[in-house]
Image 1 (cartoon, rainbow, N blue to C red):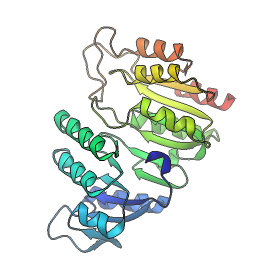
Image 2: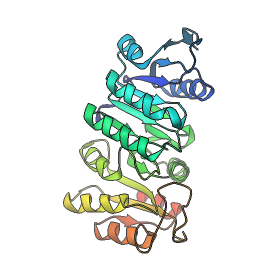
Image 3: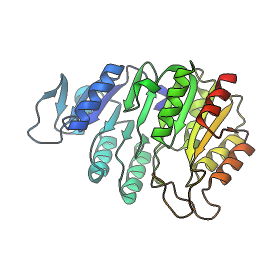
Image 4: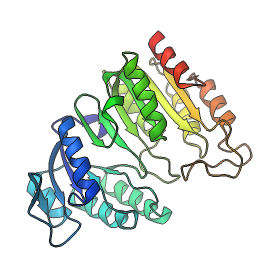
Length: 289
């Protein structure tokens, strides 16, 4: 579903009538996203919100709008029910932004997505974007610039800085995806490699990683098994992270040599990735080709 996204893709906002749903639906629409409807958090919700039709449930929203993608602006405790309902209704791409989704719920959401043949991005993600065309989430506009670099990230904040510095340098993105920083999630770095390699609008790939887990190592293995003509650059946050201490994200936890900055950088470098120590060095490397 990610590969077929466009400004025409019909998108639902689950939880449209809530404060965050209203605010971000407005931002996404201004950016060009085709918001076709939403669902209510309360039974007494209006029939429309800021000109967007509001439906009682996800099944009715999909049936009434033909939506293919959705973003869930619902609390962590309600994420599993919302996701399972979305996949059952026919949603092909679901973005879930909430942090703090229980691990067992994330496992269930992943199982439901696979059973439905759908794509799940999240949890704890700022979303995704086709810069200059559409975005699903809250990626800052100042960091989005159309270009030919595909960007994927665990860390929202660090990726905003990378995107902003790229834009200031005259560089832009072909596709931007925040995979989220939780240990159990939907789309992972390795899943995106074939998407980026097949995209004719992408000339280079940037990976913004962080300590913890084995996602960067998985990507390195996938890249080594699929030699790429496209250059891959990376920056890994958490060089000074202490063992056994979670650094910001639930998945940013190192034990011994598992998930460390050094281990990730070594595996990526061995696979042909150019690892950069700073954002400035990363942007300069991209500018140099």
